[in-house]
Length: 247
Ligand code: SF4
Image (cartoon, rainbow, N blue to C red; front, side, top):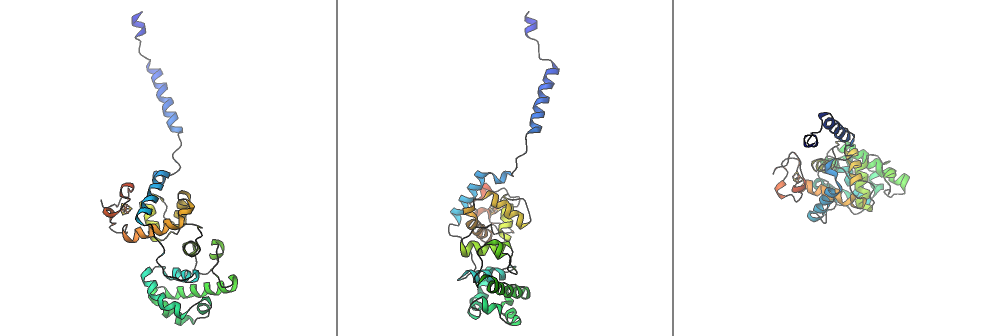
């Protein structure tokens, strides 16, 4: 009969279907990575960095791996410009690891004083120089494991020296700029530089690790300032959803 064929589905059946859908969505696992680290988005950011900074490189002046090591130690809490001013005469006075290792501490302290924290930096530079002579035949070692045994050398310095002086990609340099920009660009939600480096190593192809950190440092120094980033001049603006964007 016509009346029977028009029968509506019972409320009981409807409720079962809804329950099934709810159960399915509850079982769907959450994405393991933040949306910001979607491979296509990361590739787009890398392309934009290549476009804006094709020849980004380390701004610490040096003529060999040892000088870069010393300059990187001196650059803690100091600008590269100031370090370059100091090292222009420093490397003439102390031309090799031996000269630093056997320097008069109080004299070296005064020589590097403009870079700040000069007492600790003197200890680190002299200690690292001695270790390079005693353990590594006068050469800066080429592995992260070995370079981390030098006094005053942590992963950031190790990555700078291995990457820039030797072209060895052992990790990603995470300085204050890389830390800030990685978070702004939602490439990492961590605050600890070591964890941020691990996050970046997972999403950036290894062959880009060295150049990526140079480019991010350049972007941080020229456009994406800590205060008032110049978003209007940023070629990644359409990819960036930082809360403190200025456009
Ligand atoms: S849009 Fe602004 S906050 Fe985002 S990366 Fe560019 S300069 Fe930095």
